[in-house]
Length: 363
Image (tube, rainbow, N blue to C red):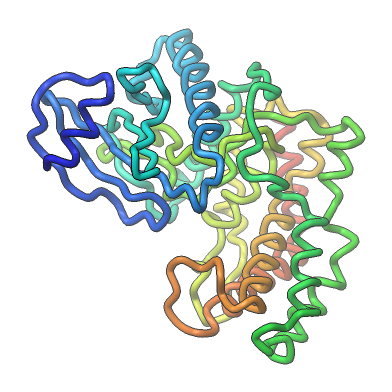
């Protein structure tokens, strides 16, 4: 307790600490719930190996959440419930750095919400899409030039593909022979990987504030109404392409099986996709450009490809990046699952386009 009291006292909070307990199941940051003065806070020791630029991360977070607070207030809603409130230190810093080189941050806990589970109904899929669209819509006027790129070259598909090719050539774990089929699968689609990047460079797609980790577990929902409250885990907020956020959310939420299933039967549930897109379009339908709407289905395909390539690359490199390692070929199974999902999306692309055209036509 003494260690936490010493840390908490350096933030702008008052009252006695009455409770400290580990929080969540995250594998990146060490996270604790702290009750101080009757108010629940979340204290996190940031992993500065993963987040190599912690001060830039925190500056992004303060800029974005303060902008969100203003937008939420203008809508007549509660900013304490619908976005994270970060607490400054008594020295008015955004982050506390200890003498040992550790980094701590503090924010108010949103006690009225719980983590969303994998959507299993149309209403849940709709909420997953809607809350992401709301996040993008509320930040549509934010000047992205103010934000740092805290994860350099994220979604840069030339870099992603090059990393795979380097891993194949190096073959440091002698695994290339195990996955010739998967490598060829990627190479056959390599010319299709940079469509969105090229559209951004051509000025056809704008850079917006993006979350960049839109897994359904990063959505808080009301335990009674099951309505989505807000997005959390904003560490990777940066300038980016909004439809890639949407594509990654679909990859996680509308797939029929989890990424770690070993059956190879993973596919895209079109009805779940329809409702997720409807939720997103209800918030962003009038904001997205024509090019973004045209490429939104491709973005789903691309995010499955990107994640599969990352898993395959990590497998070839000896599983360096996997943090929840369970068995030797886990990364390979994950890659195979993503590529099965890619194949299914390719087969269903015409149907997906009909769905998206119908959804956007109404908005």
